Length: 319
Image 1 (tube, one colour):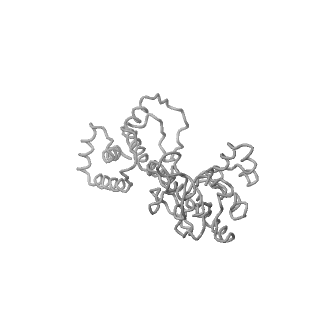
Image 2: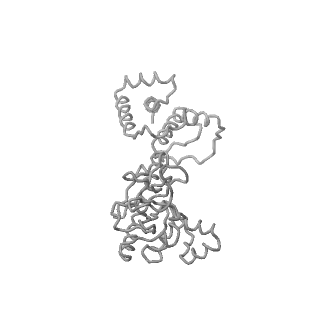
Image 3: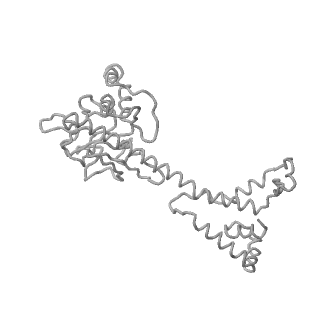
């Protein structure tokens, strides 16, 4: 690249020295070839995506990078000369001009603007998709369980903790080998069995609760409801295809959305919700048709007060 062409790059990118800006602009105005190259460069830069919501790179990133490099002692490292006729000029660090460094810094700044937010958004999208896939698999297994149990889903009231739904599905052979109730992360430890949990309940209540929450993983399961005679009833298919049965865990504290998908591009969080009919959708609000997903109508985490009062709770929750 010639000196004039290098100055044109700096002029278009906006990182040329003030003293050289007028000279470069004059050269462009007098040379049709340089004008054409400047237009082509602007068209290429215009193709780069912009997102007003993305975080900008640190102020004066290119200028500060150049100043830092210029302060360093850059010794010339001896190296063999290029073979005669190779067509490659011998390179040494001092051969870089300030304009070259400015252009490099500008390109790095553009990469930061374009790439970093895109990677973050791609990870957020992957995590949401991974959770939907896991919930979809659980939905198919839950409905196979209901097929075998007269329309009833696993009963958290019989075992006293919400995470028992996963034990029922796993020990009933209704889940793929090695299936995990995690959302975009890995948990390689062995899951406890129903017998293990019964033993822990009396011998180590604290460990029982920890394992119960671990069994539930990233998801909250339906606690069922209390019927008119005061008896606890498990979730049942007769409640309708649109009844929520699993969703991302509620927040650790407060009335907000799940934290599973909270991030720079979704500051208010939200939750994937599985319904009895097998549909999985993302909700930006924790209420569904006026009903709070995570508390009953008495504003408590516990069984619903009627079949229409669906309550989803983490694995260590009691109906």
